Length: 391
Image 1: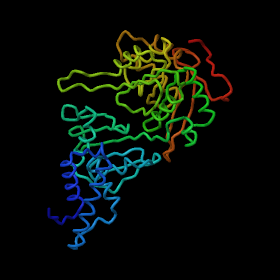
Image 2: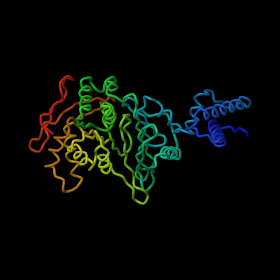
Image 3: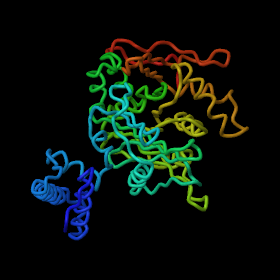
Image 4: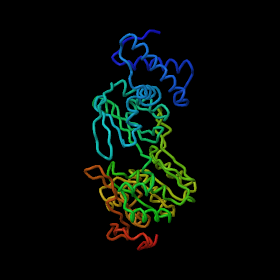
């Protein structure tokens, strides 16, 4: 086989590695060691020919081997950023406008793709998820193999280019102790929340987008007693948690024929048939709030996140969302039910520097004039968590 000169010699090397893997029937994801050997061999072969012909060589062998394998089994030029433990999120506004966030601070990266390359990467990401994105379904949420969340929007919903967001969930923030070390949670707050989770209290985590709600929710789940059976309900798997007795459920998009959709409301109802000691809803944003409130009022402890500007705003929103379930749902039922079933509301914030922290923790104390009253819940860890009224 003759080597052809190219502005980017890795293009021909990638092609030869792909041919060799196909001929040997090697899946680089299943047999990464063998794939790495073949890639290394082709890089060295290229350099031998390039030196003899005065062409461009691939000087950093290890770097080029990683890049080649990323193009074949990973997510191409994006893989280096996805592998970087400091990168929290990556998004593509256009093929030549790609950004990442580290420690909550966004920056543009020196990377330019093509429209075709972006589409190919998205298709590769969606391949194992069973989800799709097309003109009939221009939005998609999916979980990548490492637990990261993928969100894609395509034209003509967007003006011209495919828009991609990949939100990573970093393993170093899996517990309350991790968040204490990171400065996001105070020691007294962590003790209060850990006791509440072990005692079967219900906690609502609120905050704006990117405030750290899902990360905190995962840490709260990790604080549950090992004997508790936990069932999580999400639109797309995001909660990267491990527990001895845990069942994770996610929704499903409708098929091309319009059938087969599985909603959060359906999942919440099914979860209650699984003998949960705690029901977790990844994010409450619609009528599934009614099913959460009903579950809490039947004695099943819960935990969930909700978008809100403050802890009291979160309670107001949780009282409003169940009304979307139908005309027969009245606030005179919902408000007292929420006040009686939610033990703590933890509000998260992200400041201008990107730092995420708990801004406040409150507990409902009752209802006055149709409004849930609250009080601060921060106290010494040795004090018992009490309620001013019975469930």
